[in-house]
Amino acid sequence: MAGVARQEMTDRMTENEDMAPGDGAPETNDRPTHSGFVALIGPTNAGKSTLVNRLVGAKVSIVSHKVQTTRAIVRGIAIHDNAQIVFMDTPGIFKPRRRLDRAMVTSAWGGAKDADLIMLLIDSERGLRGDAEAILEGLNEVHQPKILVLNKIDRVKREDLLALAAAANEKIKFDQTFMISAENGSGCDDVMNYLAATLPEGPWYYPEDQISDLPMRQLAAEITREKLFLRLHQELPYSSHVETEKWEERKDGSVRIEQVIYVERESQKKIALGKAGETIKAISTASRKELSEILEQPVHLFLFVKVRENWGDDPERFREMGLEFPR
Image (cartoon, rainbow, N blue to C red; front, side, top):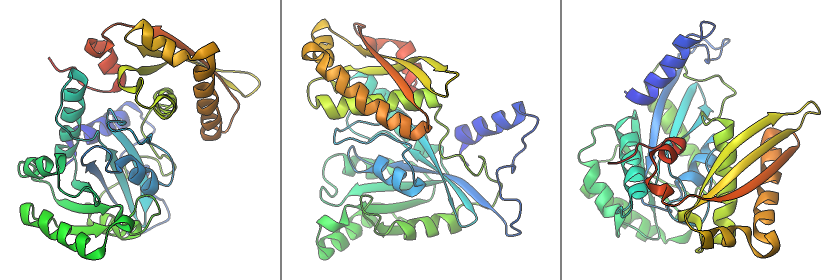
């Protein structure tokens, strides 16, 4: 039973008198519906966000080659056959060093314990080295059904994949093992067929056309943070945070969005701005283009960079990211 996530949805249904549990389910289908929460957990950069976007069929979670891109749980909602599958894209699990790291890892394990089913995603190239080994040990304390998904199979020999699957299943008894490529979609239909048949029978939790429960203001901030990661590589990302401060729907059908990129030091502000403002302009252009496509309306995006020393120790910033502040 996905306690917290399911309770949040029930609370929203209760607050809205026009909507009751099951209103999201198809009206013309006599077959019983299935629904449930699936937590994707795994080491950093295993491809969880890429897989969620692939399975949902739309971008709901930002992606970059940087580790620790996902900071809080993002829910992507997919319909397959008669099932509504709510994927919980969790932060990568690793050995935490900073307060933010601890909050992210706690969020990931919390998502796993709050799901109907756990999907462990392993990078087939990296195998069980490093954080993957520790995650398998941690899963011994989690009692939900579990499946193993080996990603990036197009880069590994079949005999090595079979050996990896056997080694992982020796440590944890998985109900099923899948071999996929989140990048090209190979094997993903098998995963969806299994989940649709396995999740419990019950009403859908979201309307049929909803693909995420992330507020649009927050998704917009995430899109800009992704462009920041892609543009600045090693120079800034983990010291930065993006917030959407203003959102104005205009009479001409466009939207004006104002966002702030918070950094910790004045020297980082100069990096974010770039020479003659070139860097911030490039980030703004890339983010505005994608937001216009997602919103299907013109976007006027204004980015500001502000120094907020030690924002990583500010409880308000953690709440903004959807994380609990670790004491």
